[in-house]
Length: 187
Image 1 (cartoon, rainbow, N blue to C red):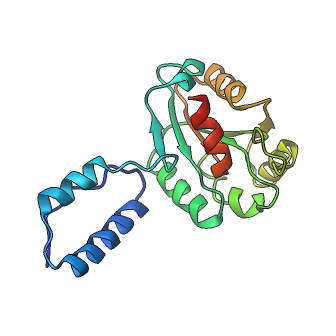
Image 2 (cartoon, rainbow, N blue to C red; image 1 turned 180 degrees about the vertical axis):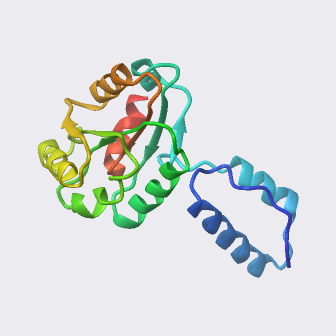
Image 3 (cartoon, one colour; image 1 turned 90 degrees about the vertical axis):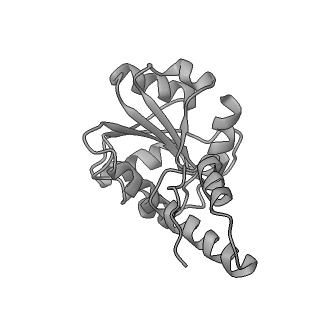
C-alpha cells in the first residue's frame, strides 16, 4: 500500500532508500503502520556523523558565522560516493574537506569521488590513532586527482585555516569513524 510520508530529516538521497527499506520491513512485520508515528520518526531521526550539520558547539568557534560545517564518517568507496552526491546538491558553493584516514584504507578509492566537488582539501592525522594515514600521503594522492591539498596540524587548525581563507565556505570533515569520535569529543 502507498503512504503519504514526509522526507527523512537526514541529509543524502541514500537516506530515502534507507528509510523506505525500514518502512517496508516494518510494514511487513507489523502489517499496519501508523503514518503519524512514521512521519514523526522520519522527522526526528538523527544519525551522528552521517552528513550531520553542526549547528552548535565548540567547533563553531573556529569558523565564521557564514561557514557551514558537516561531519561524515565515510571511510569506504560507497560512503564516499554518498558524500559526493550530497555535496553535488550544494552546487555553486565552495566546499572544503578536512580528511583523516586510517592507513588500512585506500585513499585513491576514496578521493577519486571528489575531484569535481571540492575546492580544496586539508589533510590531518587522526588524533590518538596509531594507524592514522600520514597526511602528506593523503595530500599527495589528492593532488594526483587534481585536488588542491595541503596538510594541517589538526582538526581545529584546519577549520581555522579554511575559515580564514573563505568565510563563506562549506566544510566537511570526513574519512574515518575514529576521526568522527575525536571531532565530536572536541565539539
